[in-house]
Length: 451
Image (cartoon, rainbow, N blue to C red; front, side):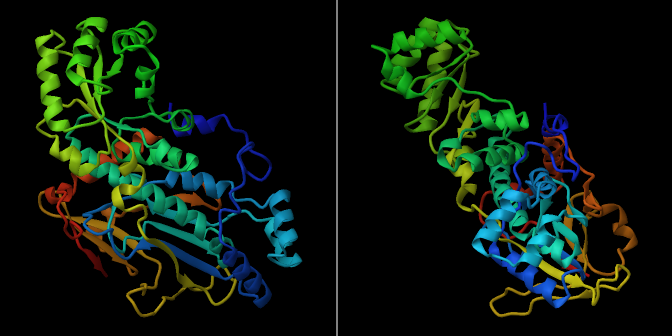
């Protein structure tokens, strides 16, 4: 099952909103509504506008970014409606005036959105999302767009680095208890996009169809009078293919007891503390000597991409990652911004667009104009530049363009399954130069070239 399958069964009301899905209209900042109020009063609210999402730089040391959260973003845009409860809240707080409330009561995004496909990689200046419509309908989406893309892309980038470090060994997302309960579900989805295989979070499994796993914690062992009783209870309930946690007391004794209880068909043992490299080698040797040659070793314990890479030579079969993953491994946001880059001088849909850009100190400038983006490749087919421009697309880049239509006339036109997105990321990462997967600090693996 995937996210698209889960959405199919949800009916829509007359306005196109999915029945039973909460409004996302208040996932916003108050200044978006006060700007709307002032623009409506000034007669500029309906001017055709283009907003773009981009980041001026990657987090320190990162070689590439990962676009994630697009599927969640499309759901959020579709359900961005000011229903009676929301209107009542805004009226009670006197956040905007009556005329603005009347306008909001009929709000539905009817513009167009283009963006990089979810799972694609990006670089500084990449216009990963372009939102087109009236100023009024586009400006309201700023905060919800940025909150989703900044969070999910940060998690996916960390997951991608961990996936590269794991070298094909399975990765388990288990960070739900280290973050907000709703953020945990989004983090699990983003981790799956970035290369993780399973999650411990049942809400993520239910919402997005991600495979779930889990057996027991130290508390289960401590509950019983001895380790043997705990292992026996777990095997009796879950079968010999279960994973037994062996570091509550003495690891060597626990491994011996685990094999005696479950037999050589024991599925796996989990190690959650100590010198994981040393302990993994000792446990592997012991399991083999006991005839449990197919019993896998799973390691957890505050892992990040560097710890995973350090275990590359260890006899480890899978990694469980929590805190470092759901916090972006030190970079919990991508610093993406949502900027007006072009607008018309009137509400006439045929009025020409004019480039606009912020000019300020401290490196917070932006480049005006409605942009396209393409990825140039070298003779061997590897990416060698992110090309961004506002004029005609060069003929040699026409087939290399990165933005695709996501929303047309307010209707979502590009929902995808998570497995499609996940596979796309694997392909996109593989098309980068080999240095992209190096964990040492460095600059973006390819430059951004403006035309």
